Length: 195
Image 1 (cartoon, one colour):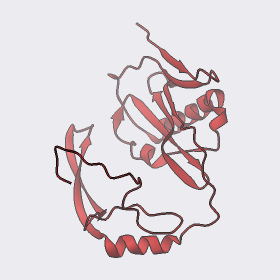
Image 2 (tube, helix red, strand yellow):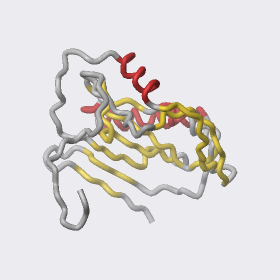
Image 3 (cartoon, one colour):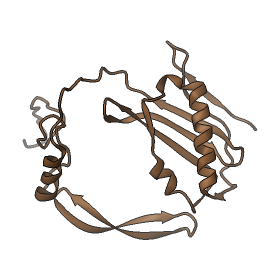
């Protein structure tokens, strides 16, 4: 039983998403060679079906190297949109590489149609880092991660910049000032709650 799904852009007929059958039961131990093969297949697929986005996306290679040694039947290739010196979070290309067939078995494109602003200068990165480390608290914390090979949770120790005292870790790239809320809205009153 073979199933496939394809979604095209109605204006351009460009590929938006595509998926085929994947056998998730046959898991293999991920090696560096498998990662390299997946990246090559992803590059080839993108050149054929998404060449207009070439040079505007960056592959998350750390995510791939973290997979080495784990067991899976697929490798996910996540390309984040990168334009005008900045990442556009949520935009990019995601591909699924099937280890059993050695082919791309899934493709998904998220690309917001938006005019990117032009800026002449940026705030000093050092000033922003200083605010993070002096105004926010840096602490050690354990985080649980599910280990697929052992089917149990492992604890890993991290340094994390916590949002204490409730200071968000977002700063204007232009002024360097902390952004308390990225969206400004008019005050709305509700009859069923206070304030």
